[in-house]
Length: 316
Image (cartoon, rainbow, N blue to C red; front, side, top):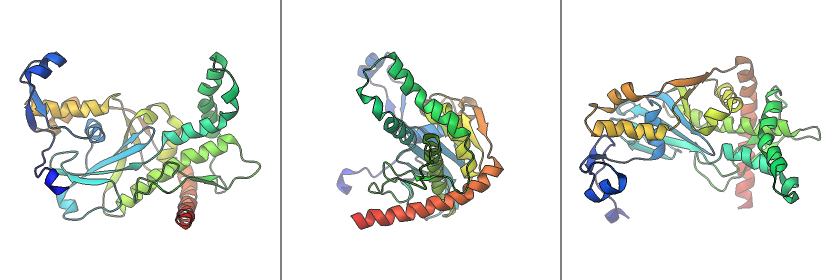
């Protein structure tokens, strides 16, 4: 592969070239304007969310992408193991960028809804059927919120679509443990929400364990806007404040910041962030009482993960 790869890399505050006449006509833009070096959407989103050392940016939707940066002097020549990527300047120029994430997050809730809706498959599509489907997660959330977590709660594993971090493995499977004849759909749904939060905590602990500093979390993406129950659970499990960024298009905002620097409007991305950065629309503080319970449930999650891996590798 090496002969086909480039030998030089450039950060997104660099001008790659200028807009050609052909594309200027197609886009309705002036010919010759600066075109910045591109980057991955999630990395741009982290910049739009004002990423900084010590701040983990979580892009939370059907799956998650976790982005953070650290000073080069802090990392040195170390390689952070078990994550998805570590690249100099991939997020912010002058910093080392890191990427991790979960293979499924909101997709797990959608899967559970689909499971519960199976009896409706033979009912003709119509307004009433759609009303039931639309209200299913709303009702599950309402009742799940009323269930206080305890050491005896159902525990689930969020590997329904494999594991992305730590140590990517798409062969592992999800699990739900501790079911009884008294278990209810809202209790199982709560366990699935907690499982996605436990998976998030596993990533945070994995990165912290290798010397990365994580003081707080900034959240973007659909789940962060639409699911207060999920976000509060995440804050409780992480035992860490979570701030939801107001911007609806954070990836585009980050790209616009780099474009502003490339065009010479601002001298660097730090200055662009000061003028263009989005504010915070909501902040979730951890509930200390629940956090203590989640300490014990998290240990059960880790035990279930070990057991699931043993079963998986035995089957293979």
